[in-house]
Image (cartoon, rainbow, N blue to C red; front, side):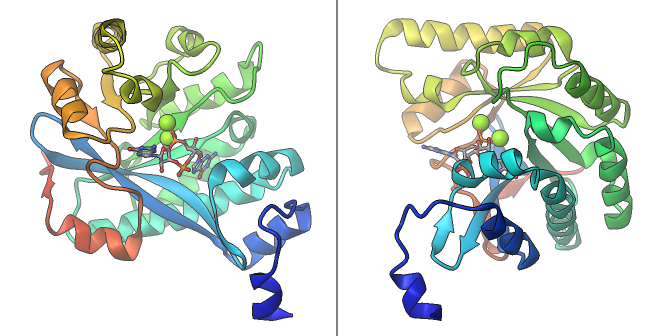
Length: 271
Ligand code: C2E
Ligand code: MG
Ligand code: MG
């Protein structure tokens, strides 16, 4: 039992519904935060919350368990947990003096099917005494939903609350353009694959330039994900990309490491 059984637990043991219920009960889902940088000024603008499962057998990445949370419906209990934990951490950042920083959370299509979501978000913001303009919601099209009417309605309600919407992994999905057409979004996060393959051939640079221009022509803030080298950072800055995120700047950090990390960074001032 205990330590030894955990040690010898097979690495790819199938995750069951009861594993996940217990994990939620035991608060084993921990949020790490990856900052976003203004490429022109080098200032930190905000942080994105990325969940990890600190399970008894080690840290499990979100792609391994979020789909199971969704399939089992546990995701609807996870959402209030996520809001409570991440907004508490944002409050800590604000109280530590980083009052300008925003929090960005990832919401899947399944989470957006909850008609109560806007109310849950409002309650969580009120409880933490944080204004709606300090929250951003990132949406990805993971499931091929033909007419995501319900999801779009939820997103419209979030917009009415003055919450910023952002299209995550832009360019990777089947119909990222549908989002651009249907939603009042403020930000476009370019999928890291475009940055990863940037210098492989000239046409990749052209595609990336075109995506940046597309975003700007629509009045959106354009962010590049997955920046890993100074060459990529420089190209993106010189080609007008507004915001950057990636291992070149920092990995996602737990809150108790994020605060000391921010001490050595330039932070956007409140305007
Ligand atoms: P995402 O929202 O696109 O998050 C970016 C992912 O890329 C993160 O992986 C991050 O650690 C990783 N990343 C960041 N910079 C770099 C880089 O420079 N190079 C490389 N190779 N990777 C980088 P992570 O944390 O494993 O998250 C994977 C996905 O899981 C996220 O993609 C997001 O879609 C989803 N996810 C994470 N947290 C949550 C959550 O709380 N709720 C929901 N619904 N989904 C979440
Ligand atoms: Mg994201
Ligand atoms: Mg992404």
